Length: 426
Image 1 (spheres, rainbow, N blue to C red):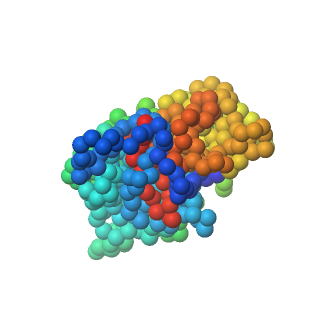
Image 2 (image 1 turned 60 degrees about the vertical axis):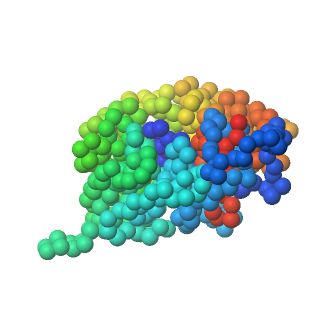
Image 3 (image 1 turned 135 degrees about the vertical axis):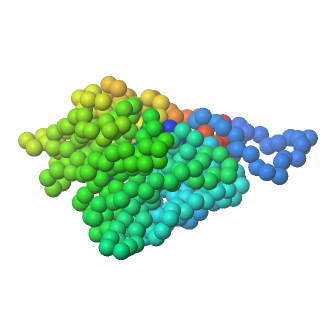
């Protein structure tokens, strides 16, 4: 597993993506199983409505809605793909709206109409531009969505200029206004890092976890979502996953050799520490489970599923998945993908469920774009495809699009470096 760690929000996150895909082909059509409205049907409402399908079988390309440009600014490569896939986009889907974060705030977009129905800005000036201050998805915390922003603080009196991470909590109901804000002072290295990113990792039991990563340093914070203040600081910790009572991450160690750790969600106190691992990657892999891969001091390679509460080994990952990035489908399956292979693993046991590899058998591995609620979406040799996450079988209905982000109402598709939202179909 050599791809960079991608924080995956576990706390009620509705998105998952692995490798970027393309938009629907021009000749894509709505599945024939869905007949056109009868001539006697009443005229549709002037206001479009989205209908929930969990998970969606297909996406209606006729209901296209464009998202703000900031959703993909600086995120695509020359091939028109999103670097890192959907989970690196600064977008959270929640019911029928999208929260689109930027280095200075958030826009709330109605996915039925494309209208911006809410907007909040951080206070002050951004520490870095969009490409230098990499913004990751907001997270859901009960009835609020949390958006962290890296901001400068001006010099005053005898105090030098500095920087803070400001957390904006925006309501999940109209008028989508800020319910509260909290600012935490950043260490001096944050103002000097050329590349810096902030992520809201997750929120549970009244504590939201935010992590800031610079060129060669990290820090994580626990924010009290009731008192709206700093609860704890974990210097050197790059938080990756939040579970019941615990935060897992990588602690800065020797160059390129971090240490897997678990810290208490309520206090930030270290609860367990793993073995220093060269080129270590960690990613969330299911309920209270993280995947850690890299090379141990004795030169042996590891690719393991660890229990977040204790750091103990749950299971070894099946062989051959070292170069893949895995995403939990939010139900019971871990789906791993690379440019030439797709496989599924039971995160509780490490059991291999199925695999598709280029050049093996009659079926070709699709280019996976999203994984959600038992479904794998991507682009196959014949266009957009959907697979059963547990069995790997092709679903009978052509999805008509290869979305990067999915919930029960929509799929977000990349087209010409812009994200478009398509209504979900059953």
